[in-house]
Length: 461
Image 1: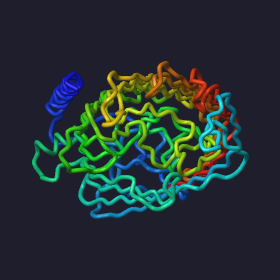
Image 2: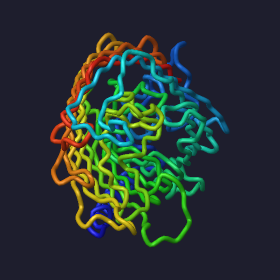
Image 3: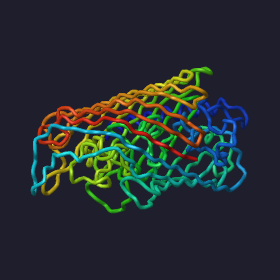
Image 4: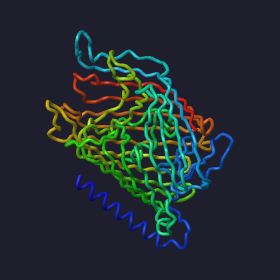
């Protein structure tokens, strides 16, 4: 924790220095380029897209695929209080098969290691509802609601936060500072790593060129605040949260804030070349229920793979994923390179995480930390004005699960192709193969494998 705080403090100091230098170099009240990344608001409007009327917004349709953080600079004029609704709906058809070689484990006459028979069919559809309100110049409130999801069929709120990109007080110093600073406060999808910007989020799968997300899915929502500094393509962010997926004001000996941050560079170097490189850190010394790698309550795209005969789609929401089980403490880092050369884009993930959970009666932290490493790389080629694409991703995870005496691993290959019929309507397909290695013979995933095809349709606006 101490090391992480020192690193994040250094990032904040460096960002403040860079921002101060840029503010001093700015003459008068002119706004300087704070990171020449693509702006969705600058994209010409058409009859097939919903006009962007809210400032600093990442669109939920095709216009958002090349954006990561909400854009600092855009061309949406402030015209007073505005409310804007959006939605996203996704439906999959699954054609997967699975196998394993685990020893029988009979409990009450049921073999817990016998796989559920699965075949071809439609999964439950999922849906998101988006509400954004422009409450002042450069200030908006965002709310995301899951109308239907794999894990929760009922409607429930995913997150809601306040984004500030302009000074609420008309003071020259603050106005200049807010040209480079962004504040985000609330219950939100924390900005750890870049992979969460390219994943499927329940009903909205339009940013993800593939059907499934990463095997070890670093995605969660927590209550906290983030401070961003952006200037000339450089990015620095420091955040603090409660370290849990929900709010809690009880004083507890096993709880402490989570500290996290990001440092990076993102610039359109030429008309054909864009380069982005970021590094993220996340530290939680102690938490009664940390969910950095278990926060996707919407569920994975691969239904009932490597699950036993007693499984249900709702109970086994994360089939195909590997959760390292760092519920008590976690220290993680993720490095993400992104290169776009004309229609070709390359994206990578290098991630290291260590931590522990609790076990025993009374429950106590594991005596030593366990470690996990994740590597992923994908190549996507878009053509015909980005309407069509093909892509390939390779993803591998290795580490020690709680209660095991040896490391396990899993690797996944995904071949995908997609078609943006309109900016708001997408159709894609994927052939996926995933193998489970070095699991003990008593584990249902021993010599496990699933493979087959997935087809997915997405509507988002």
